[in-house]
Amino acid sequence: MRALLTDFEGRTVFLTEEAWDHIISPPHDYMESVADVAFATLRAPDEVRRPNTRPENVRLYYRWITGTPVGDRWVCVVVKYLQDEAYLLTTYATNRIKAGGSYP
Image 1: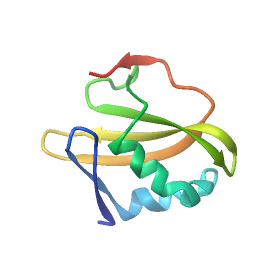
Image 2 (image 1 turned 180 degrees about the vertical axis):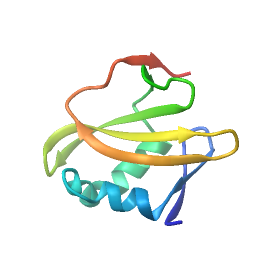
Image 3 (image 1 turned 120 degrees about the horizontal axis):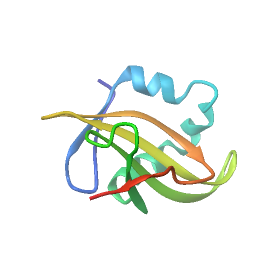
Image 4 (image 1 turned 60 degrees about the vertical axis):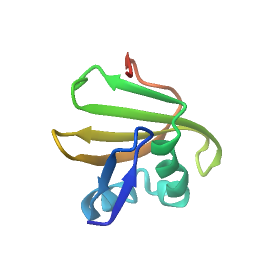
């Protein structure tokens, strides 16, 4: 286990070594330089969405940031919620918020 994070509702989110290695690997290795902002997105997102593909247990946390290595972008943090645990799957920068349902 690499880190314990907290989402905006006070739930613990686990960040595993495997997920961290994925996050800092190409093509989104630039995320290492903005990791603090990405993790802060969990605590204070601008928007939270339910993806169309797995709306029952995955949340997409978005926050607008300026000055990333790839320009001004939305940072998206993807978290999978299980019955008693939550895991950060990935984080990346994007031009737009994905379609999906609003949360809650």
